[in-house]
Amino acid sequence: MMWAACCVRFFGFLRAGEFTTPSLEAYDPAIHLSLGITNHSSDIIKQSKTDPFRRGAEVCLGRTNNDLSPVAALLVYLARRGSIPDPLFRLENGTPLFRQLLVANLRRALSVIGFNCSLCSGHSFRIGTATTAAARGLEDSTIRSLGRWRSDAFHGYVRQDSVAMATFLRCLSA
Image (tube, rainbow, N blue to C red; front, side, top):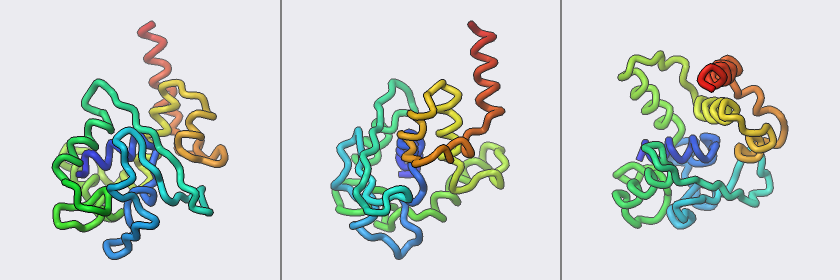
């Protein structure tokens, strides 16, 4: 479940609140992602920070030909999960994925591989996604659209040193 949630979050440019619940008890099918809304290549976010009228937003997930495929990860997870309704990301006991659990599991996994997990927060995926997109040369307008940013605030998420290094290395290899 965690692998699928992380892949969907990264490739979908998702905010934590768009696919987790704020707490263990706070799951609301009218607001949070549920099983019935996924078609494996796109999901409908029912509510977002930049969607105050709850119109929802479609998030497209592209299939890749490598281990980092959000569609493949979601399909594997759904096959194991079964068709029990609501919520989309849930533990085996039915508990919805909530923010604190996501961050705790991510920090645990990162500490196992020797990463300084104190650097990890709820925004780490948005930072990583925006930085990766900028490093790959995506236009600012595309990054803004994919991340559902209504302003240029996404620039605060892009870590320029990583982008500059990727650009420099690409130039060296050309």
